Length: 140
Image: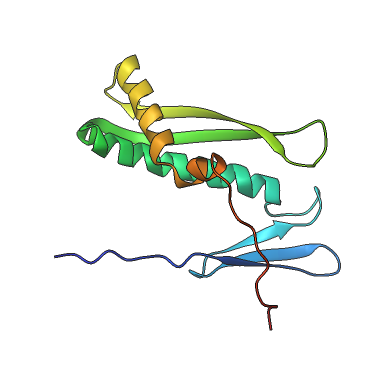
């Protein structure tokens, strides 16, 4: 029997006085954090779009398995483009998702894969419910 490996959740972002920073996940993954538009790295809005795009891409694979279509699934690409709200508070008002799903599927099967992917996507599902954001103990 195979054991399921659980990846630790959480990340720490650091930023120096000049706006250069990075984000390190508890799993050890690391990426540059951009403190201004001219800097290398991801800004927080790009990370939000990336989180949804990545989750939906992985969710298409799960959807194909759930729908019995896994044997025909090729590669998957998901583009997510966020749009900020025009009125306060500062937030993302909409994220537009575009899918490219390679495989021998008709239009109805592609729509079913996308619909199922949205149902199983942890990030998308989190948007539809309240996420409690609380402050914990200070970092040492």
